Amino acid sequence: MKNSSLFNFEKCSLSNQLWPSFISEIGLAKAQLAVRQALDLQKMQGSSLTLPVLIFETCGSALVSSQTIKAYTGIYCEQQNMLLIYSNKLKAFQLLQDN
Image (cartoon, rainbow, N blue to C red; front, side, top):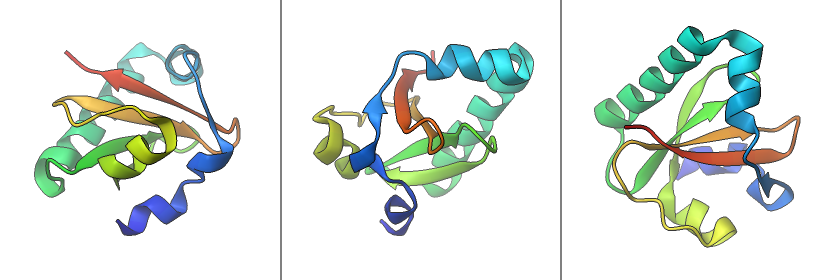
């Protein structure tokens, strides 16, 4: 997928702190809204082969191939309501499952 070239997964590490840091930065309500928007993007333009990405620094959203995530992390992430938070500045990403 084209967008995967925008993300530098090979230089990033898996984190468990991006979500709490994201909430701390912008607040819970705005963080939840950003997640909803990323999941809506997946519903409108994605497929079973894509995963929504929430960009930490900008609150932007994108779609990336779930196979790309599996290739870099070994994690199978083709479940519904999954998304990835990505931080280029922190060189980290975190997978989340929204209920």
